[in-house]
Length: 148
Image (cartoon, rainbow, N blue to C red; front, side):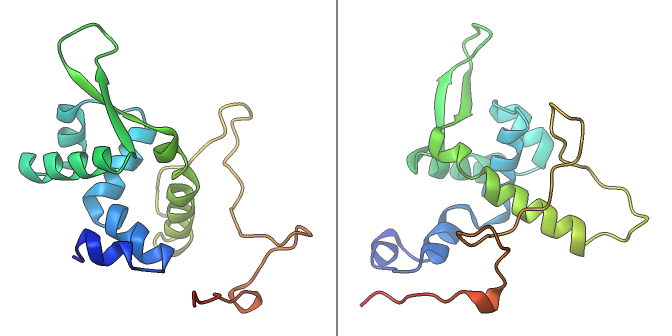
């Protein structure tokens, strides 16, 4: 894994993002936080990850401002991990990965979870990047402008 100093020099936003949330555990912690998990023990039970690894990933996400620690909402002495605004802005990333997985990693007859709009009860529509005119962009319609 690249060190923090080298990443500050990295001009690619994808590389910086992958360094923070690109490992299995960090991304699944974020997914579970979107599903309402807040406590260390709940994350551990859900993920089956070793305590030291979970502790490391949670610290990294807190240090990066993706999660913050708060007193437990039920008044107990526990601390909870809560998504910040920065963390909540990862929602489209998680949805895009979910939708790619639904489309590419499951057979049509294979059961899997669905992401549902609470207001309509319907599965949310497929996400795609769009141009200013609303047309869906293909990879060939875009280019990366390199930093000079």
